[in-house]
Length: 392
Length: 164
Image (tube, rainbow over the protein chains, first blue to last red):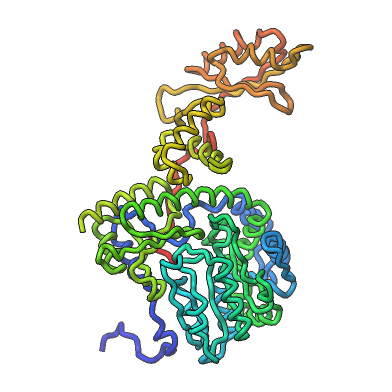
């Protein structure tokens, strides 16, 4: 018997059946290659603005290294509430409608566990962040994907969402601006989802982590701020993307008090509270981060145009993404599948991108390329992609 | 070009004066010819005074020496600080000159080949100017950050190459 082979059957069925993130394979490939320009990351290239970091250092120096309340520092929750009110004229009670989480990922996980019973269904708009399906499955529920298409700028059609709803449906998960497409759902599109949620008495899990990375003119639509939606929406956001704080792991969830209380129960039994120093840094980000965020957004906006223009010039059709820091061009013209394209581009020209199908079946034929990287790297990456396309 | 685009153009050109205009047009979302035309009109209007390189002189054996010189003056009855500032600004050795708040009146950055040249300039040219009552010279020994750019060794990109 092979001594390294573990006994079968000791991992729970739901975890054993969970496919590892499709991104993982590319990660291993990149790790073996030197000189790679990566358009494959899902995080800012900017360092955390130093005043945020120094706030955390200050809190360590002051000895604030103990637990905070399970829900997070009240000062931080108050700051979050004021921030949301200012942006969306939407008011939450910091005492029982806000929970500070370890990033949005934890928030989604505990929301699923707090809300879903085995066999419940959750409608998920795809392509989407890799953890949505997993969070639903780990809660012993069933993800039901709804496909979106480049022709609709990756906005979900109301009819498609409606067709996915069954008597077992409990919730709809949306993310706008979207990872991986960079799509921003139009207000009309979100209102369509709101009508379906009201008609079928569904909850809406709205991941708005990219709300401040928005390059359109009409402004971000906060789902919970739509008429009648506050009572059935859990609003997820965090500091990772807009404030360049991915490693600090601070997110938050806002919603009706009964749901936040249920989520807090799981949160207190699993992580107790978000790291204290990170919460202090997040509070500083809310207090003084605005100008830094504005600078980063302006920089992303220029890189966004450069990369989208570059792909379209090279014949890789790319719709104009209005949010986040991703482009999602089609590679169908090359005759390669998205996986073949990414793998060959990486091996032959050392540019890392992520196959669209990693984010759901309807992402096939596309690649995700981020512009959260410097202009020199973007220029070089476009040149390498051009040479790659010429060699096909 | 909108006001926002004009500001973005200036911000870009301030840090990347050599940038390709066609690329900049794409980044700003304007027509290809607009960048050159707008820059020309901003130069004409005196908003853009020039295009410069950011040089870390400390990396060279024969660099330049800079000193911050605090200058106390008796402002003149009519012209205030302006007349005396104009007299100081005429010297090629004066790199920059500001009227400032605080314990001194003028802050002068003097540039020269070596310490002695700068020190002698202050002693022989700056201090004797009519109206100057006192000077204090602080030589720059090392520059850590200038024009918003840190001159210390660059930080590495420690991000994972592929992340969700």
